Length: 314
Image 1 (cartoon, rainbow, N blue to C red):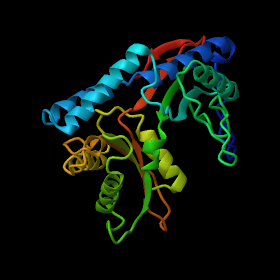
Image 2: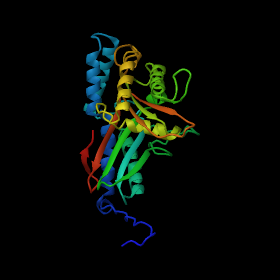
Image 3: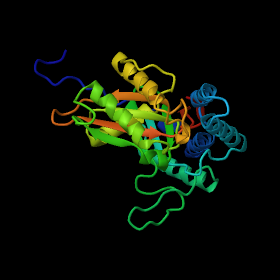
């Protein structure tokens, strides 16, 4: 029996059995294949959304033609196992691991996989020193790849990869509320800020786009929340009915703007909007918006105990 006033018992860490069984070579091979598939094949939910958007555009319109070219690009990239876009983007890895898993070893394996994938042409040599302008040549350097580790009580490792191009990253934004142009610190102000971001982007960012939105937090956590929303399926439903309504209104209103695919006009400016919310301090109210292009490159795997791929997630 625990003595009165004694500190509560702390559950000891559960050492992952994967530490002893996972092969470095198998893990690296799995990560290379994850990169290849993410770079060259759009997930099914995105392909369905692009096809539906093409069907919604007027036959013979510039918008329909733009979406037809996008569909052809999707098919050719998959058939040839070549990148969907010459800008293979920032490399973001979201990794859920059991307690006790060696995250340092995973980081090393991820860097080795990025080097191998770059050498094989799945990634363009895309990582540049911000001070000197020198290209690393292998996509590895400070902040690249960008890994986000989280522990969970599951017995396996889950890895999700997102490749985010620079063009769409350029048209993301962080808004501060209240704003005389958009409104106060309320849902209407949030909605107006999101729609202003779409308006400012126009055809830039390779639309039709997908928005990730982080409401609240600070300037760092808000944008991190926004990017994490892009890991959701396009056709999912937000469990928060207030946020679900916001997402639906933003897409409907953006698609009434007439901006259309690539800014050519039409009925498809956005393929989706995904929003999350964080607590904030009273002095600040940020709305962080990350814009994803039609080449919505995200994929994920569950890893087996030996480091192989047990299941694809998208």
